[in-house]
Length: 182
Image (tube, rainbow, N blue to C red):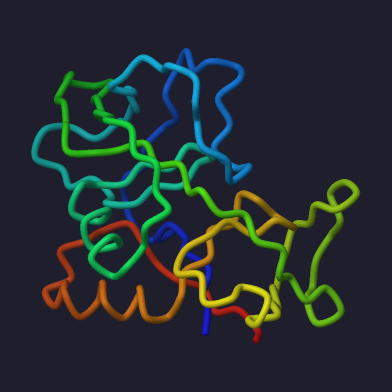
């Protein structure tokens, strides 16, 4: 069973994508970045010292905390290309340095279009209101981007369960899952 990995829309803090990214840098096509890139990547936030930042933020350039990445990897996810990142406050210059910019290396075509509710944004790419997938086509992948909507990150139930079991006090913030029809 699969879910969409999303940001927690009720979380009170956001992270903005880094400035000055190379125009060739693409993190939604499922392929490894082979170009040399300057890092750490610097994300921006309006949060200030003492505020809690999300452990997961997806804005085309996913930011994940070290502890979130660690739990994903402990759950068996092995398709993450990680780049050091920091998050810097635009208000008081506070820096949070335990983050990564993450490239998810799998792009899988498994949308079940006849059972989904969607708008075709351009040929072969869709904006889903309700996503249905053919789970057999995902072949047990633990974390991947959906080829029909590459900004969507799909997570296997066992990974979400592992994260929740290993975060019983719900210290990880900013992430949520959305049901997918299967």
